Image (cartoon, rainbow, N blue to C red; front, top):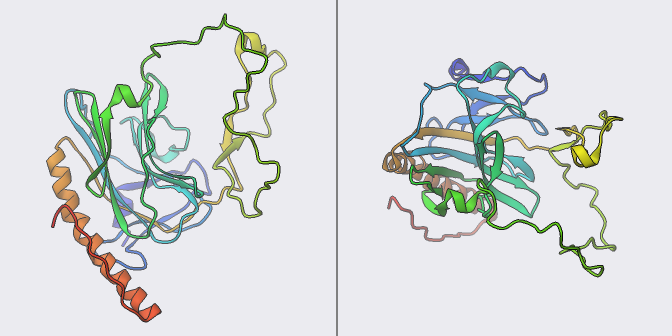
Length: 302
């Protein structure tokens, strides 16, 4: 079925963007109900978007919610979504297109398994200062971001609160209360390094490449003055050696101003799917391993 392509627009900014198709994955709760947009190619960037009626959430709660399923092991890759301005030209959307909110799981190696929450505030991007752990298994998981008019927020994973607080506390929107005294000299013995490189360690042969790298074709302008212009750094570009992973399935997108509706919708759409997927996976493991393994799991909709 190509009906989804009537709403979702594939960016043509680059010819090598990865392609999506509709699929339910290797195992599922219901073959039809669990179909979502599935990434189909490894080592690819993806850029697809769907338009909805413009809205202004001033004075209202904003809830952004969707599900993610890693249908194969992910070493490095982001499964986040972005909210753009209504004037976005979808056909040329790319990684440099300005967005309002970026939200969702982001995995890179063993050390980075987080939920990204990034806001655009006065044309600068601000990352959440707290570390929120994302799910990494191959079940479908529900991610919810709630922003309230009183400047509080919640991040929920599978309808449980993973983090909550005040926007002004957990993002550096405001100037710091204390600033550095530039007239105080640093002691000669001072070493600012919290960690140092292990001289005995070496990079593994299969080390994951970063998603973006400095542009090797750009050099510092001859008239660049570091005292006046600051430290020069080349712009970043997509890394051709970056190894993204295919198989991620996106589904159940919801934008609303009703927290309870979002929670109920999550329980209704995602809850039964998760339980059935878990049962199917247990059966697969039993069939392949030859013994019974079971654990009791409690969920908020039970």
